[in-house]
Image 1 (cartoon, rainbow, N blue to C red):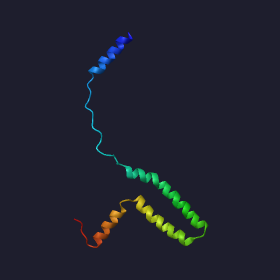
Image 2 (image 1 turned 30 degrees about the horizontal axis):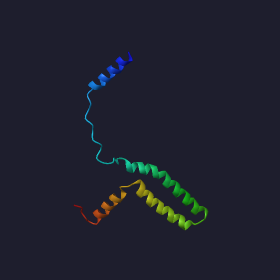
Image 3 (image 1 turned 45 degrees about the horizontal axis):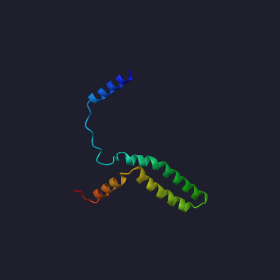
Image 4 (image 1 turned 90 degrees about the vertical axis):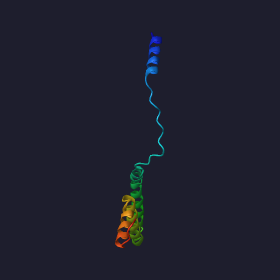
Length: 101
């Protein structure tokens, strides 16, 4: 009985059509990599900024605190809005009358 079942299973497997093997993708798929990295490093960035800002406040170094906050805001804007550099460069070039080809 079991030999008959095994033989029938082997015959069924032999009769099933096999598809052509597909080639592996040409390169590494990096779709969504920037979004993943942004979601991964954003909380880390905010924690580091918060800790350093609190350090400057507790040591009463207000000038360094203000400098750090301005720098953190600039880096945060570039980090959270990545196409802002391209948009700003195009706006400056347009204001200066430079046309791209």
